[in-house]
Length: 317
Ligand SMILES: [Mg+2]
Figure (tube, protein in one colour):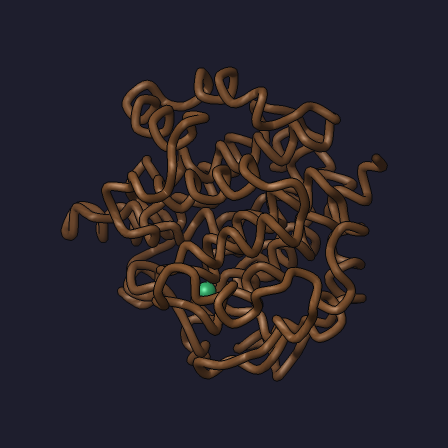
């Protein structure tokens, strides 16, 4: 499969999962398939819970902000990414993670805000850095394993002081890169785990193990470990893009984010053409803080195409 098929699959797949999962956020298990029993029947991009049909939530909005910074700055400019996040957070997005909001509005400088939040709260391993990683994963894949995992950690650290969130985001970046290289990311998981910081390896080994099931999660799936574990589980136990997304949303809980992460991974594996057009057609991404700008499918495809060329220098700086 062509690299560009996979790149577009990651960006659009994640946005599609986000928009499909949004209306089911904090709902019970099985709610999606109870409402849409037959795969392929249509109508799934239903809206609800304050979301219009096809409207992407904060997961995709933040992923687009990262993309715009990477492309406009021509490098990984962390203060610029942080400033864009802050402008967005100040523009009353419909949804924003509690931890992300606190870090972006506590008045601290970009390189201290997340760390101070972590020092005070001690709980900072939410899935909020993993959820927005589709665009950076595409962009840094051509730079190689070390560079893409490094970039993931640094972007995650802007809002998440807990290294667990950095490592989860780095794993996602590397799984996407492996798919781009036509390597089966699931088969490569043991190798990827070896790249995880030793203090965090065993916890990821647990949720990424072939026999792990989301029912075994020890935290709500708004935490980074079960969120990534559930996305990998959804990919592993299904045979296509649509089926993976259905499985992810049916888990309930933080459905938009679990489906966004699943959609990114499934998009990398199956490519853009595997994503149903009835899901991509209504897709749109409002960008609070950007003068009322809304991105549609063509805009996301254009973004993915520019991102896939990679950083101009190896480490993007
Ligand atoms: Mg969301």
